[in-house]
Image (cartoon, rainbow over all chains, first blue to last red; front, side):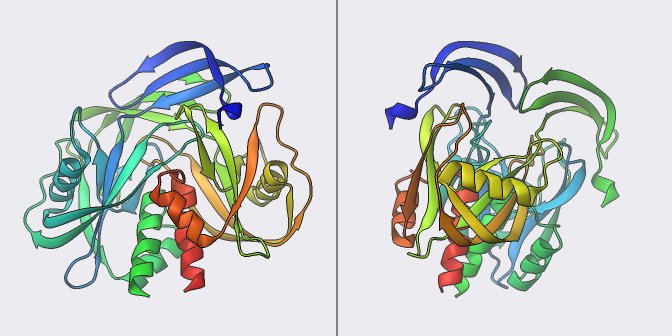
Length: 178
Length: 178
């Protein structure tokens, strides 16, 4: 599908932070004209679908500064440098929820916001859960919550579960239950 | 859940573009210590799940500069200033695919990347599709593709369908079919 490609004429780094980098690209479009693209670079992240033996989805409640509110999400976190997604998934699950998984399998991976960011999120399903202690990062404040499918669907309806990965996870869980 | 709130000490605008704004916030954490948050502001967007009378999902193939590749997604686009999400959904569907919908209902809305961005995506299901002509924006190059559920699942497996909203849409479609 090379006919759609946009040729980079120039790229300017606007900001390099701890999480994101922002670039502004000048591009040549397939019809020869020129345009500008704002591009966010992100290290990538993982998220974990963990169902307890009591058939409840493991969630964390946390404040999200970008939203200025507290929401409910499946456990997730960004990849550290050179970290394998599987290792990151096991680490984030244990840090945020205290759960250790004896088995992990890769469900899918997706870009969260392809219109402006390259964040690539790997979703894993954790099995063989064993409960330990939460060990959140020093600047992370999370509360563990466990909901059955009906409550998850209610919380979605109420807009308290309201992020892409958690909605996808609940649809997936619902599919497994049918 | 006010105990998790992060108090904004200062906010610095780093960049204001056509699509995104980037801020760096100094925050005080619930334990009293300080940290930094990088925040992307985005105007919000819509996406449309449209199933043809032949039971195929309407998709568009387009080049995404942030990813430097061409991917397959459900029709979507960002909200123009003061635009109602419903109007935006009908507009984007018609512009990108040529399809007009006689009925639209709201399925769900979610944040795509709550860790760093406030993009809020409204997902609609379109019904009563009628085919017309594509009218993409001048700087938009999209190809219409229509796939049945099995092909969508294959394309997901192959990583050619690889964005959050389209994966969520396919799970949702699969749920409707069960």
